[in-house]
Image (cartoon, rainbow, N blue to C red; front, side, top):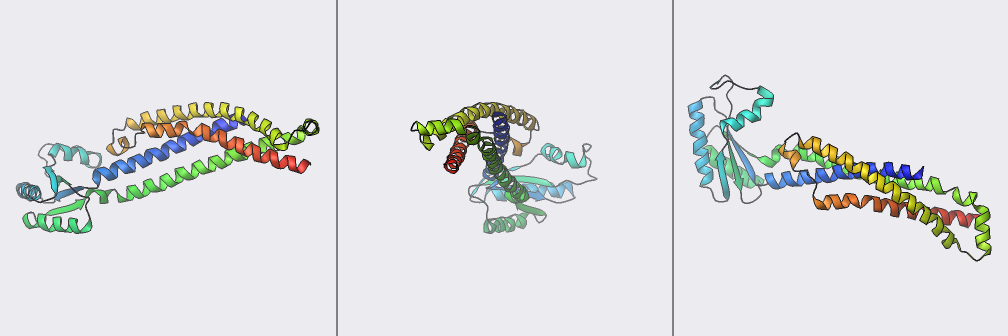
Length: 277
């Protein structure tokens, strides 16, 4: 059963590794996109005053050194953002005032000092404005992604240990069941290293077949899950798409499984032969 055990382990390892790589890509893409971004919310119930303060904040940001771009978020975009929570509002419905928003991009990453200066600047012309760094909104999300990355790494390590244990259980009795043949080989001048290579080669062939099957199964699962997540249409999810380097790393997993299985078999058989002498 060893080829099937290795196939299952490789498939699970491919899925876990793909999840870890996708999470890393998601975090990196989101951090790059949000590191220099700020959002201004004008929280004012009076629509006329809200519009006036929004335009004043927009002009102030555009005249500020270090600000690459600044734009007012359209009402349609704001409606799409709040629709999952508040539903679709009727046109002109002001029963639930929605803040006006300004999206700005800075040349450098936003730090505490820069954020404080921008808040003072904007509030001089728009007292109802609230200025936030976009990266702070996703702080808890980044923390959760880091935890999931460590979990994926731990799963890969556990699966590697389980693969090694499976190979160890499969080959530990092989020298004893072939004791007569091994003694004849010893009498003919064969060494423990040469005998261990025979078992190692056999395990390598089994591991290669199981690894290829496991890689195929794992890639099918990864492609299926990737297609399902792509259907969500979320920007944060789309940033986790796997690149060619990621696919190359996934393709190398069966090779690592074969090397691990052969090394485990060599060590186990060599120790068993020493106990037989």
